[in-house]
Image 1 (cartoon, rainbow, N blue to C red):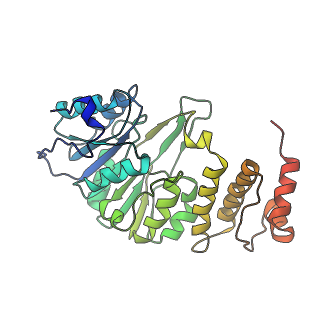
Image 2 (tube, one colour):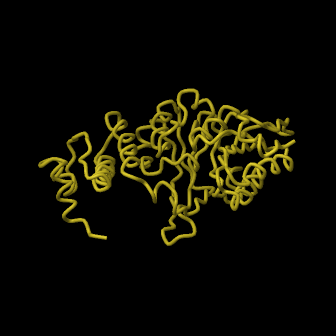
Image 3 (tube, rainbow, N blue to C red):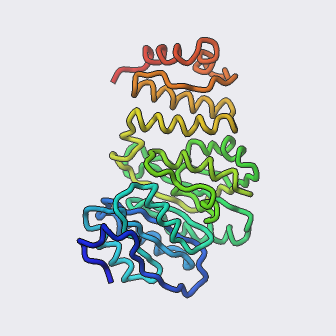
Length: 313
C-alpha cells in the first residue's frame, strides 16, 4: 500500500513489483517533481502504448501531491512501479530508474510531456528485427504550446560509426535523453552526471562510443511541452559554461566545421552571460565570417566584436 505522506520522502525505494504477462522489453522511466497538473496526462500517454513495457515513476521528493498520484497509478496498473526518494535532481531520478529497470531497453519521458499514440510499437518492432541497434532516436515536437514550437524531423538512417551520427545527423544539437530508446547495458559504462545542468549533453557522447549501431527513424513523436522555467529558457552563465565544457570534451574526439561553429556560438553565449572570455579550442575552420575572425584574430577579439554588433534588448 502507499506510504503515509510523512514517511514517503525518507524512503529511498518503494515499489509495486509485478510479473508481466508478456515478455518485458522496455522500461519507461518518468522522473516526477512538481508536475501534479500534468502527471496523469503523461502516464496515460505511455500506458496507451505497446505491451511489454514497464513504467517506473521516480518521485524525486516532490513537495506537492505527486507522490500520492504515483502510488495511485501503481495501484491501478501492474505495469507501474514507484520509487520515492529525497530530492536529488533529474539525473539522480533517472539513475534511480535505471538501477531498478528490468528490461533490455530503457527510455525516458519527462512528467510534463507526452508520447503521441503508436510511438513505441514501431520502435520495439525495429529493435526486435535489428538486435545490433543499441540506440534508436525518433522525432520530437519541441516547445509545444508556444510560438517557438517546431518539429525535429529525422531521416531513416543507420550509423555504425558514432562520429557520423554526431556530425551527419547533427546529434550535438539534439542530445535529449527523452526521444531515444537505449539498450540498458549502455548505462553500465556511464550514468547521468548528478549535480550538473545540461546533463544530456554530458551523457550522450560518453554512451555513443559503446554503440554498435545507432538508428534514426521517421516514425513516432515525443511531444515536449514548452516550459518557461526549463533550463533552455533560464540558463545562467554557470549553466552555459557546463554546456560548453561538455562540448569541449567531445571536440578532440570528433569535429567538423559545422560542429565547431555550433560550439563557438555556445562559447559566445557564455561570454555574453558572464562577461568573461571562456577557453575555447582553436581549430582550423574558417568557412564562415565568424569562424574566419576567430581563426585570424582570436576568440577574444570575436567576443568583443560580437558584443558590439549584437542587437540590444
